[in-house]
Image 1 (tube, rainbow, N blue to C red):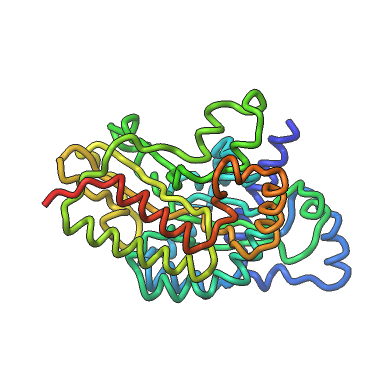
Image 2: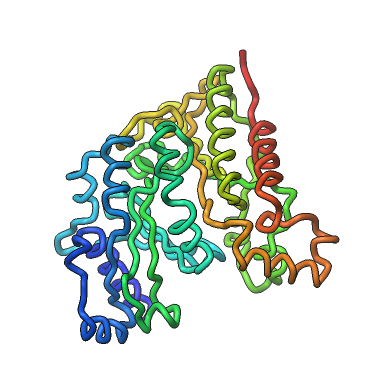
Length: 341
């Protein structure tokens, strides 16, 4: 029951934050004092409102009225819980229409990196690379005031809104045949997976940390060249920001599927037909919020080296250099593709 109340309060906070004008949340000293004692239903506001509006309308060609309508509900819960997503501590929701996914960034080193280091470069990069494979982040909401709920970790105070790469699956008659893969270089050591005794977690949760794609993507040469050109540019951008541990989220669906698409059309968001005529593919780069220079990653690296885990298990994805991670990531993608002339 407690979790249900917490989720209900959080979904209403997120909904209000996405529909509220930031200026309407400004408080005087007494209002901030009262807000401090909030535990569940915290106030959230949109950060860099104009920046994200330009991305949505000018770069990605979203209809702004339709975008806001995704978060307006009448007599229904405003968002849908998306279940257990693994070890990150993040909470995941989707809009009721399935158009967007909301992910919390509860870890300090993640949201400070995104907010202070990555957000403005991300805007300029996506403006200049509208067909980038980086996931489209359409909004960022946060708590403008410190509250008891955020101090004690009861309620996350930072959330990103992203496109839903699985858009159209529920309406597709072939939806049950859609396959998803969250792919990272498999030769890295993942402490959140490899240091936790297996009886403490389910095999399903362990598998969510990094999938294995035991097949090949069949691409025409022109599609392969365009895809790798985008990935090389995207990972160069992430490397310059010192980001590591990101993943390629791959969706494979039957060739006959015709799922909906929002905003600007691009092959890897519509569903790129495979060269063998059997599948369509969607792909985005996700989870680029871990920076190598952030204290948490450095401290974890030292702890693992102290226990001599790296020597036995190999390099860690979160403590390697950004350049090395990029090369292994690109190698992983190249090796899973079969090019057809």
